[in-house]
Image (cartoon, rainbow, N blue to C red; front, top):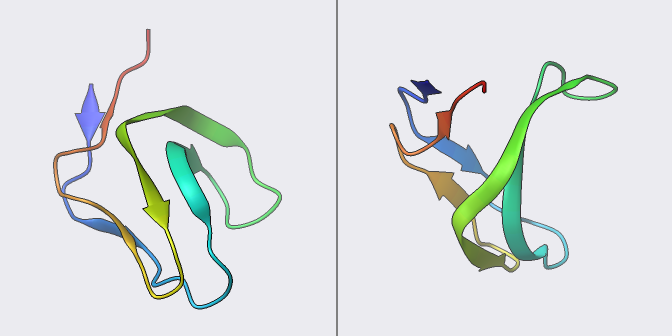
Length: 65
């Protein structure tokens, strides 16, 4: 089991509404990369213009089964 040791922030969203965000994924590159892990958030959140999605330090837990 590993978790994030610092806050992870996506945004602020400066374009159109992102809508309901229910899952996250971890990739090895900004574009054309490989998905390393993915999963559902414990609760979904709606991201509109000027909003950010913040995952607090220690809140993202990844385990390989």
